[in-house]
Amino acid sequence: MALWIQATEITLLCGKLASWTRETPGARRMICEFCPECGTRLFHRQESRPDTISIKPGTLDDTASLAPIAHIWLDSAKPWSRVSDECLQYPGNPEDFALLFARWDERRMLPERVDGNAL
Image 1 (cartoon, rainbow, N blue to C red):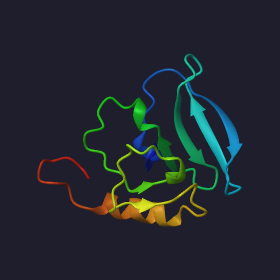
Image 2 (image 1 turned 180 degrees about the horizontal axis):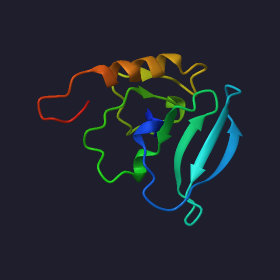
Image 3 (image 1 turned 180 degrees about the vertical axis):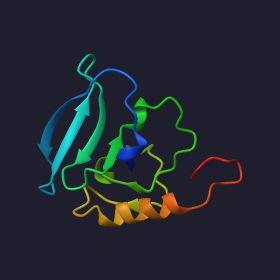
Image 4 (image 1 turned 45 degrees about the horizontal axis):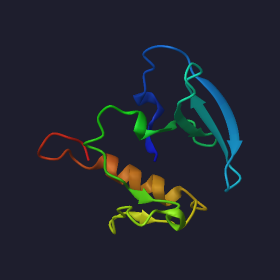
């Protein structure tokens, strides 16, 4: 899973990050940042889009207000996976992330829900 946010919305409260870089299936370069103490991968960022960070949502304490925009790698999804018809769907890695980022930008511009949580 990936939770895309603006890099300016992140504050590292303690410790330092280590990183490694890999090439994605779409021939882009992805910087993968992790905790050098335990090895947990925390963030990804594309070299071509350094202002955006992908947080690994499994590292968050509270994910109640999160809602997916897309489902990727559906060719390898388990039969019990819940896939929303409202989300973009891809059998593998998207060739181009432009539509995903556009949908994400649209979601970020929506007003807050009545319960006060951002969508």
